[in-house]
Image 1: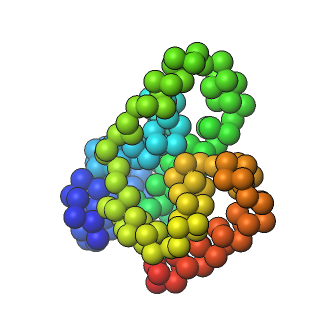
Image 2 (image 1 turned 45 degrees about the vertical axis):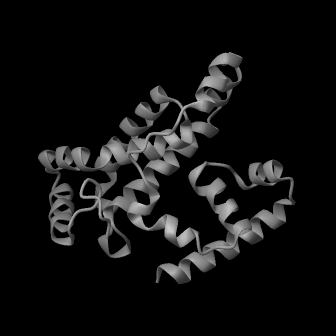
Amino acid sequence: MSDNPLISLPPAAEEDLVRRLQARDESAMTLFYDRYSAALYGVIYRIVKAEDEAEDVLQEALVKIWNAFASYDPTKGRLFTWVLNICRNLSIDKIRSRQHRVGSKTTGIDDSLTAQRQAAPTAFRPEHIGLQEITQKLIPEQRQIIDMLYFEGFTQSEVAEELNIPLGTVKTRARTAIKVLSKLIR
């Protein structure tokens, strides 16, 4: 469990929040937003690298979470992990969308350089949910692949191109890393 009270809840409090959200309690959604939005925004911003787009993705994610909450299964993982995956997937969808690609290609060179030099918000720290410690146990080649695929939103093809290695190598390293992580998490 995390040491940061802003992200993790004690199991009983999380169970109560989940129960209230499943019952469509709007005040529970307010509590959820207060508890998790800063961390989720940090993850989203780290992927999309633009404040306005990160805010849009967060809004879209919150609506999706509210509408899809009946599909959350607490036996399969923590609430934060489930919503983190929703935000991550929506962020990746955003950067892969045609609108984002066209917009980023037409950004002025000065704006592009400024965006690249901005520090990511510190609201989300992977070590709060143990990801950083777990991925540190991977060999460097596997960790690099997982970081690019999971945290930076690259496709496997983009990773292969960026690292100048064959696509099959990327797939093999990713598959092997996921197997190792699966064993470490259990």
